[in-house]
Amino acid sequence: MNEKLLDEIRIDARERKIPILMDDTLEYIMNVLKNREINSILEVGTAVAYSAICFSKILSENGHIDTIEIEEIRVKEANENIEKMGLKDRINVIHGNALEVLPKMVEEKRKYDYIFIDAAKGQYNEFYKCALEMLNDNGIIIADNVLYKGMVLSDYNERKHRTAVNKLRRFLEYIQNIEGIKSEILDIGDGISISYKI
Ligand code: SAH
Ligand code: MG
Image (cartoon, rainbow, N blue to C red):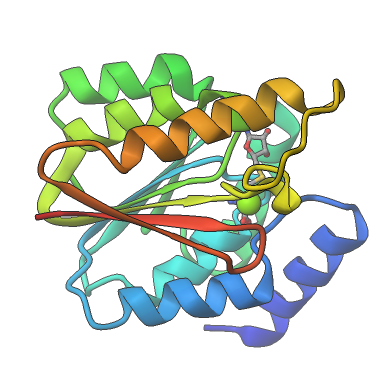
């Protein structure tokens, strides 16, 4: 992989305040993934494809990534970055609202080894329900930003972020009470959850 180009993509995204994966979060996730056999990845929230490009490093030889992005401008930038990195045959960007795209993918019976949720915080429950249906038996679901700058586990109750914070609180409760699923919540970066089938 052309690490110099990847550095440029990361630096440019940070400069433009695009909320790409934090360094410590990425490092942790890569460590979790590296010992697993990953043939297929689904990502909700592509932005400029920084995380998708990073994840492609741990894909098995013929593996692929599907990643969903709602904003047209981001889809364009993501595709440019993927092309530059020579990953066009590995990463497929789907332009659309994941709330609509995911149920269609469920219907098509798509399956993934690793599903990464990193989009609108108010919709994590909906994303996760679809993710569960598409998760292979040895699969793993990771969601980013679940602690939302510490607000989710504090007594935060201000108007500004109340809805998102309450929804994330419900999300964390939900994922810890699903039969056949074990979930961990980790205070890394902006908070991540990791779920496995048991
Ligand atoms: N995973 C990326 C960062 C994603 S930022 C990385 O780490 O590099 C979150 C992205 O999710 C934004 O680009 C936003 O436009 C997109 N998004 C938000 N809600 C969405 C939805 N309902 N469906 C698809 N994409 C969504
Ligand atoms: Mg994030």
